[in-house]
Length: 342
Image (cartoon, one colour):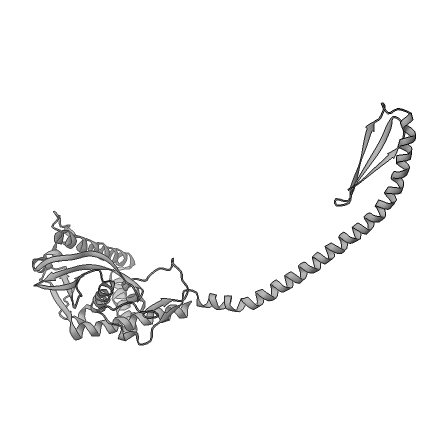
């Protein structure tokens, strides 16, 4: 800022303020009535000096302004250089970022996944299924979801035919209600069994009385329960689920899965994916090392809605191993599809 003081009269003097930065000026009138006449000569002399100083300051200010302009231009140039450099750096770093986007939530699947033991093992680096991006918010898929997503075309076609037959006979509204009732009664069935095995006072809802009586005698053979409706997760294979029951049945420890059916399931094969589901749960429980024992056997127990005696299907040794390998194949397929979709 430059201050310019010019003598106008004994009464007033004018002070001009130039603001170079904001490119504006203002005037200020100052009352000078008390200034003595003898000071007029001094002030005139000062004004004269000020004129010379103003010329010098104006010249120097022009140089200063040039320096400012030069500095601004240099800053702009430097900024431009910095921006160009940043752009170049960005372009250099864009490729890995794109790769990161492409690989987000992708999964690294160990080779020979089928060789993974159902009985658990020590956690080994780079084994199992690993998320490429460390995302703590990434959800772990459930066994049920994985089985649904990897269902065979034949099984899907069968399910669609079943659905279509009901809709064709009774209509969409009936089917929606029927499916809702199936889910509700299935939950009630599991809840009642849990209460009975927990030695709780239990009232059997009318809608599931027949299916409960179908398995009542089987429940009497269960001796010690270790887990009921237990959440489990495999530490290295990235899946989770809810185990219906871990208990001793006729003096041996089993992982048990309860099923409800309108039709007779005379063989293990007739229970569709139930053996695979049981094998997946056994593998997760064994890998968790939460129990002092390993589970070597599984049961699929089917209760019938018409009240006839339930069916007990056992998985052990070769049957269990085959179901486990089937599960690992489905699990691998699920994560391969996840990688493709991402």
